Image (tube, rainbow, N blue to C red; front, side, top):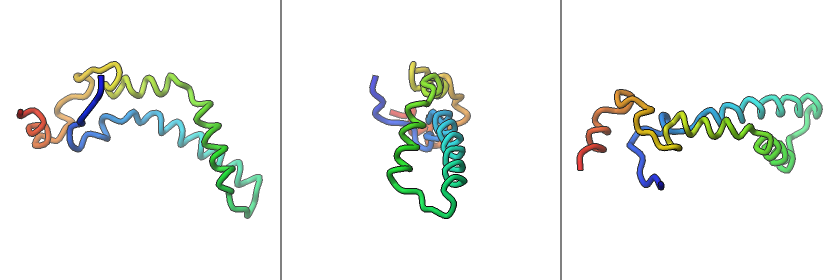
Amino acid sequence: MTILLLPPHSSHLLQPMSVFKSIKTTYDQRLCTWIRNHKQQKLPRQELLKIVREIWLQLDKSIIINGFKKAGIFPFNNSVIDRTQFDPLSLKRWDDP
């Protein structure tokens, strides 16, 4: 299945945000550690890329899978998010042919 269009103003409901929370938490910890070990130094771009890459490779894949499942994206489930959470006017335009 390919999603061609998302309902307007729905990205906050349909994004698998758990992925970003996990990445942000780990990134904050790694960054604090780097800063403590390199006082008054600017973080080099290559070091930043290395940190991000390591975090991504160590990310628990079940977090990604569960994030997509919770949003109803994959496997597709259009009843995961209650229709009352969408903007009524936008939803009406979405439903009307």
